[in-house]
Image (cartoon, rainbow, N blue to C red; front, side, top):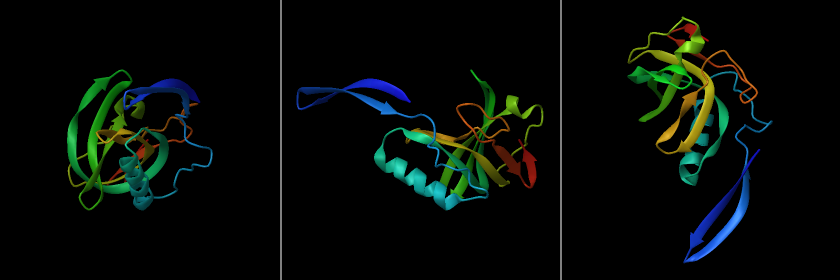
Length: 155
C-alpha cells in the first residue's frame, strides 16, 4: 500500500489530505484461464472514463497484430512492442521483454494471430498496455505471462 499527500486547489482554496492506493491487484483478481477480450474491454472502458491511474490487472486476450515497432532498450532490458486488435477498431499495446524470453524471441508480423497473458497497466489514456508477458513471477506480480504467435508459445 502506497500512501501519499496530495494538495488540490479549487476556486482559490487549497485542500490537502492523505490518500492511499495499492499498486498490486486485489486478492480477488484472478488470471483468466482463456482469452477474455470482453472482460478486458470492460476494464479498459472503466479506466478511460475515470481518467486516473488504475490498479494493474491480470488479462488474457487474443487478436490479430495490426502494427509492430522496433525493439528498444529500457532500464529493465530489451523490449519489443506491437499493437493487438482486441475488438473492431480497438488496439492495445503489447510489451514483450525479450531478455526475459531467454533467447526464444517471437518473430511477429502484421496479421499474425496472437494470444497474450500478462498485466494490463493503465496510467492515463496515452500510457496503457499489457506487459509482464513472460514466464517470471515476482512479489509484485504473482502470475506468469506468455505470448503465443500463430500457435507457437513464448514464455
